[in-house]
Length: 323
Image 1: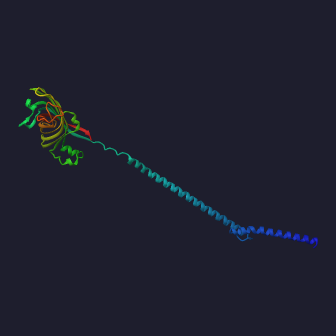
Image 2: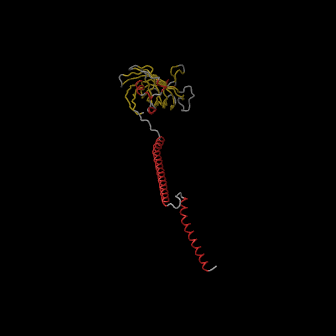
Image 3: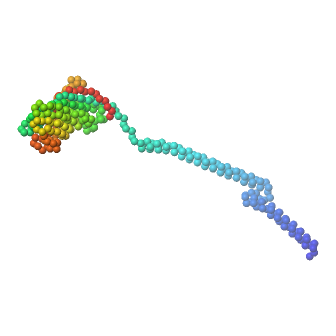
């Protein structure tokens, strides 16, 4: 083969290779376009249309994603607003819980007006045991000097039907049946116990003198008969008595005993303010020997009863307090 022939073959081979490279370069975009859904290769207008379609699809998908993101943000904002509303609703409940945990307020006190009766007058005392030794009253003190003297004080709240009608809520149910139009109950509160009911101031008229006092720790009275101006009542109370018995016949005695009192009283009111009463009380004590210590009480002549007659002037006035 000649030299010219070799050169011609080489030139032809290079031209063929160059033509194949251009063809592959042109077919690559067409293949890529075909993969993405574009037009067939060789059609320029169809390629532009496919590009526009892709752009519109991408625009639509982006708008859809934007709308979805906006709707999500709106739903989130709505949920946040609901949560905030729920939180705002729950706050009063927490306050109400705190309020319920607080201590309940006390009821306001009401003004109540009651009638107070105060009485004072002379009293006569018999330090003797009843129905002992065949006599109505007997004992060393009574046999030496039958009567001793002093004063009697009385203070009580008057609870009548008018008070019950105005203050029904203050009276326990079990006692409400006791109140009738003519009923009057006398009640002495514990504060009255600080004031002595009886004062003994009885010097010797023979051989025995008595000095001391009796405190009525509690008392309850009930009217049996009551008219517009007159009443007949009974009462009972708890007592504490101290009396110094000074005698020339037997040894002096410090009489100190708790006791109980029962009595009857007849009273009348001259007006709504002033009145008078007279009555009798029998005061019973634990026995104490006369002339002995306060720890001794087994003697036959031990003192265990003091009789008391009294006459008192009464004064009534309204008293207002809060309950």
